Length: 258
Image (cartoon, rainbow, N blue to C red; front, side):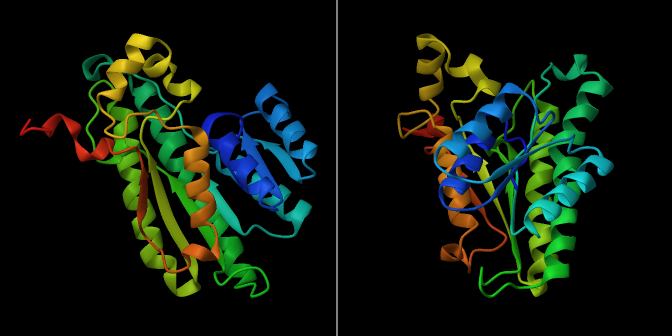
């Protein structure tokens, strides 16, 4: 299951899992949106299996329906990629309560609700030895802004800081059930949500000053990390955040003593 699969990182992740042979439950606000329908066509083109389920991850009833549809279609869920997220930016003193709450609801409460339903399903089913060494895997999509302050985006940064501690707390609690929980913290990725940061030559040049590796990330960079964390190749990786950022969190401004 991949939430926020209608575009960007979510779409690339859903395609990566389908290409690897997984049946994919793809979630976005609307199942019949162009992004979701395009995803279904792309998965079908290489013979994969995918189900599109619309729903708002910040709404408990929608999340319960999402998991019920997944279990009805495929029998169970083995992996959750908790990816759905939004931005609603404003200077702090101008940010409305509605802007604050909407981002927290989707980015943090949405991950709580989806992870809770996944953990319930994993506990019910227990370890399927023919499939995996774990009962289930949860990948929480965070951001480098779980650690890097971001003026003008305090709701987003606060939500991602919350995702980090949500992930580690779940990992601590669910480990005895053989449920693995990890996070991914993407840096600057070429997605529509941050088009302003890379859409022109000038903006891209400024962005690359923050990335020691010298290129912007692609959604597929994050998708490959999610696929690895969901596989038994990473079976002893638990409660950790894999940073996929080309070195952004190395604070390149401090090169040469700052």
